[in-house]
Image 1 (cartoon, one colour):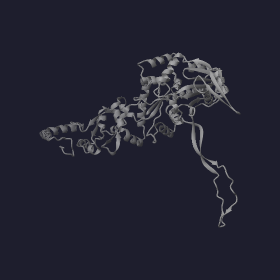
Image 2 (spheres, helix red, strand yellow; image 1 turned 60 degrees about the vertical axis):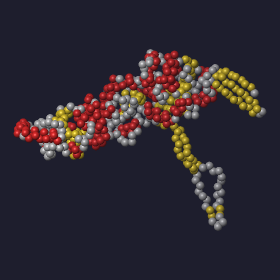
Image 3 (cartoon, helix red, strand yellow; image 1 turned 135 degrees about the horizontal axis):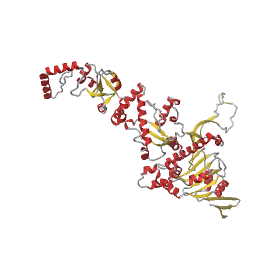
Image 4 (cartoon, rainbow, N blue to C red; image 1 turned 90 degrees about the horizontal axis):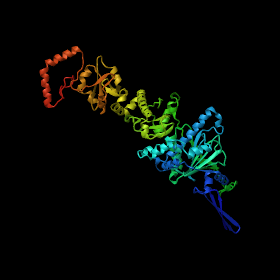
Length: 602
């Protein structure tokens, strides 16, 4: 037996040779500076022993820029509120690379000669704890890998670090700053202790960039142009990040953050299916028929030739099936597509009562999701829609908002204020244009919200007032709008009359409405608790003020002649009316001369 040590660059190989009689056994133990076995590295990176050695010999070692080192430590230790955002950042970078090659292909189609596929592919290797994110984008040259991943040649880096270290910068602001300064790639180190980037650009050979966050190496890939074109980011995950190797977890993250990316995103997934397989014949069946004791011939039994077997297959599955229909013209989208789109983003099984699709110049709540350039940013906005419209669900996508700034900064952005204003007006216009049947269902469910909007949103009060519906003396079962009431008002009628109560029966039998009804005036019936507050919040509608029919001293303008007759009667019967008022005061009853069929006292 003997022990021999051989050194190759940064690789230390220890060979222990053991000779036992006629047999010999050689055990190779290989250690690298990165602290893992080379056999494992060879297996994981798809390199042969010779290719791995060649890669190590060719590798050029570099140190990260000092500011990058500081920045990565801050990112790893404190920047993100949740580690899952690393996948969003990698897909966003892949999408940018795909956009660049697509833009170049518009003027030079030959840039797609290596492959015309434009996609992102995600593949997990749970056995070896590796995650691959591969795109067929523009790729990076050797110089690009060094400059883009090893240094950040922009003045914004210093600003980024100063804001991170500023004591006045909140944790939430720190967590949302990474994309704004273009350092999303470094979020990989939140979940990985080793990152390998393999990239092929049309103008250069395929290169491998490798780092453990302390330094990095760049070497020409001995395998050649296996990618054809594009970039593959390989993450060797930390133990606490193994959850990100689960197919369901990856799929959910893509659906949450990146389902509206313009390019197809595929996930390497397994599926189990039942198939028929032939049964292997272990024994030859005797073809001769046998006779039993009674001389009867026993017929050969027909045995099945196949059996049901569960088989697991692996294939690429497209996981961003919902395309951003808001990027298409309204006329090109079918109603069924809107219904399916609604169900996909809300997980609701019912169709929406109404929908609106619009484009505005410059285009919080949990139901409104904000995207910037098809990348999900947040759904944690409390004021992008007013509270009374909290039931609205939808998506806002803008190409002009800054990507990944803090929510506080975003909420103060002037463009977001324009978006909010436009959203509310478009939603109210959508309600107004609803089919009568759908609006009736909508009103039953959300009438209180609209009435609260009258009180809370003076800017849109007039628009909201047009949506109000009340029962009236003109119809037993049908609710009417204020516009319908005004259209039926009598000549010279200056007021919109209403009476409030706990039920239809109560207001219909109210003595206060008798005189109005007898003279042919229509009266609105306010039977919900919020109705009277709603009306009191509205000074007028269409130039007509509101008048409570139960208010004392109600005067009805019946013309000069009627007014003169009324004054004459009041003067003639003044002694009687004074006495009746005193009696009503003593017994604690209500008293009115406006009654026609009811008693004076009640």
